[in-house]
Image 1 (cartoon, one colour):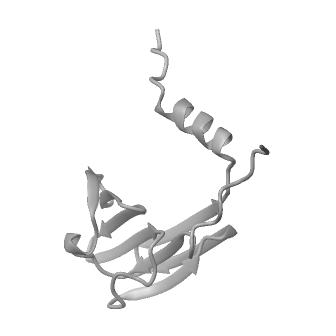
Image 2 (image 1 turned 30 degrees about the horizontal axis):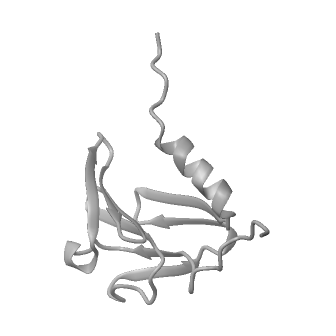
Length: 129
């Protein structure tokens, strides 16, 4: 039997950009992390089918959502909706102090290559002496 790539998910990945925070009830959150820096705060959610990252700098907020399910969880505050199929680059400014740049590339892997990549990324990294 040949090693074929899996059938493409219906809809693929979508990048959604919001100029506001999003409510946690819109997603099934699997893990969270908060990052606080001098110039910004970020709240990161690993959600079913993707991730949500909310950046806040001063009074400005930009939320990046990359998910497989579509349509968008809400239209309120939605600035951009971009399918990630293929290689994409996007750049924008949100308010006076947030410059946003992202490059995405959605790939389809054979099951063997997917399993090897998953195993490699899950492996414990060697300790540094």
